[in-house]
Image 1 (tube, rainbow, N blue to C red):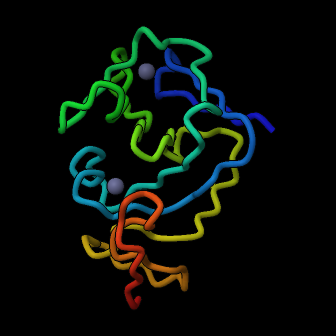
Image 2: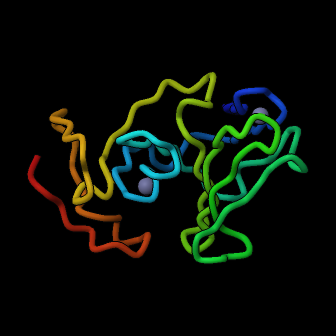
Image 3: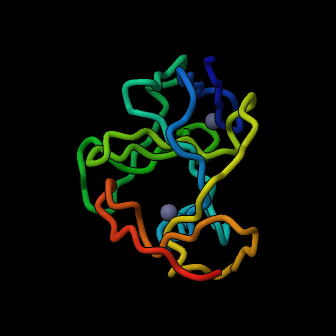
Length: 142
Ligand SMILES: [Zn+2]
Ligand SMILES: [Zn+2]
């Protein structure tokens, strides 16, 4: 399966090969301030599974920590957010709203300690990040 994503204006198009590793809700402060939404919906693939179909030259990259490879990606034409590259975990994150052919089925909440919008859906709530991404791997109660 190849999944397709595009920004609001369509200048930037992505293709992701294979099933995503994780579909989740992220409640972190950084997602909240970047997206202007109380909760974000990252869909994660291995970095090597995602490629730009068009508009790579239009992509703007923002990294608070100044990381040269990592950071948040947005379209330089429509300013729409696209996702993020997480070099430490070797992941490419595409925000769920951009994926036209993915049936979004999140299985976990991450960074729930920062939540401003509690969601009682019975899914596991990680306090921060999974251990394999450098987090504590601890779970919180709903
Ligand atoms: Zn765009
Ligand atoms: Zn986040």
